[in-house]
Amino acid sequence: MGPSLPAMLKAADAALLIGDPALYFEGDVPRLDLGEEWARVTGLPFVYAFWAGPRGAVSPAEVRRLQEALRQGVASVGTIAQGYNGPRRAAQNESYLRTNIVYGLGDAEALGLREFYRRAHVLGLIPRVPELRFHAHE
Figure 1: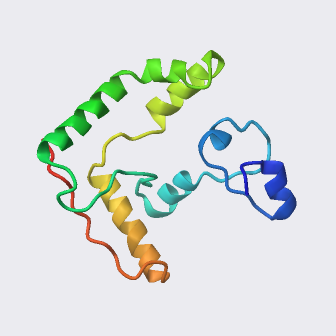
Figure 2 (figure 1 turned 120 degrees about the horizontal axis):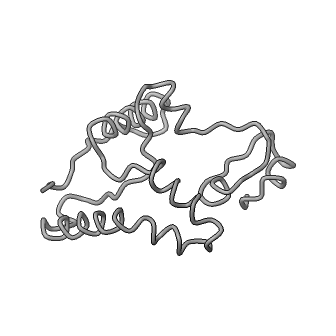
Figure 3 (figure 1 turned 135 degrees about the vertical axis):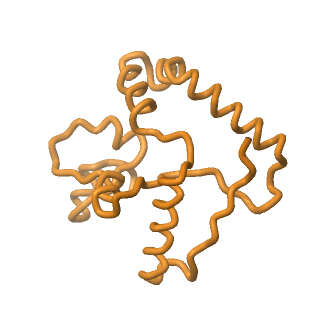
């Protein structure tokens, strides 16, 4: 369904909102943050997204360019927040980008990702737990 909470709740017992509809929702319905719940149950961070590709998909120089783009993006969070969805949302956007987004994949995040895959495999949702390999870091 589209991201209309009233429409979803009219058709089902629960709804899933992601992205802007979740970020900007101001209603008083009971809610559960899946990332917070994952951390509570496992003690590990939840990895919502990451860049992935097959071995050799990027060269070491391209990895460095991606890492530099990350550094520039993080340094520009205030400007990015100002330019997204208008100035009335700028403070909320900036807070979200500074406190809710983890821009690196460290040891804890890799453990959380591995645990997610392990649980998905145990439930029969994926055929095997994939091996995680990381492109070279600086």
